[in-house]
Image (cartoon, rainbow, N blue to C red; front, side, top):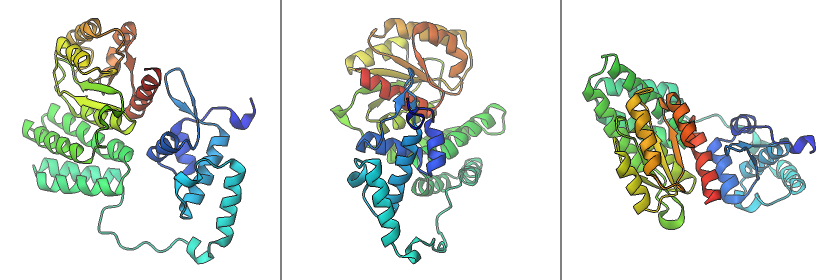
Amino acid sequence: MPADTEPRHPIGVVSSRTGLPQDVLRAWERRYGAVTPTRTDTGRRLYSDHDLVRFRLLKAVVDSGRRISDVAGLTLKELEKLAAEDRKETPAAARTPKRPKPRTLPAPDGESLRREALAAVEDLDGARLRKILNEAAIVMTPSSLRLELLVPLMQETGERWRDGTFRIAHEHLASAIVRSFLGAVSTPPRGSGGPRVVLATPVGCDHEFGALLAAQCSSEVGWDPLYLGTGLPAAELAAAARNRGASALALSITYPESSAAIHDELRLIRELLDDAVPMVVGGAASESYRETLDALGARWVADFADLQDALELIARRT
């Protein structure tokens, strides 16, 4: 295999080297066939040096004003020629970065936005928290919004509740507003156009945030999410998956870690679930159940990108 076509770069490296957000990389691949990465046995994308060059050239011609749908199918030589032509014909002044205008919205800095949002939770100021989240949705990509703001915000809120710094009211306020916010910004359901995934937390797991975000992630990769909430018994999960013709069951376990009762519940879910329906499990505490999940043939996912890769792999096999 030529060195430049050897699959060796994960999507995070490609994003860093090309300056394209992971959401854009996925969209260009999925919707326009811009590249065809190799997949590992677990569904993770690996890109070659050749793919990197394609992405850089595609970014260059799109930045010049072209539509990705018009250029995604071009060969590498055609892209190189087009990019050179655009550089030659574009006036130097137009290529010179302009001085940024003053912003009325916060810069896409997840850390500062997280601090502002956490302060709003501490003050029980729901209106301010909504405003911060709505503005963040404008200036951040969906993955950055999740990873840099929403996940850290809810993790710290939960930690402060557990150590007594926050009261139950603080966590409930944050959860309610984030739940409403996610409902407003999520990708519209695709109805019968995509496979269905049932999402919930099992009995003993009352934190729904991870499952809510997982529902949003699943819709971004073409799945039709059915979110059922928290603390669902094994029989209810299996019945919902069967009655709704689900192609996968996704569970979030944020807390507690390595509970004997939850180990047993996972075994019961797998026993009652149709053999053809794969089970995908993630969340902050999920790795502590890894041994049980492996024994059950369930797919453990480390993060939301891993979840999307797992769902795309399942979709190709169904």
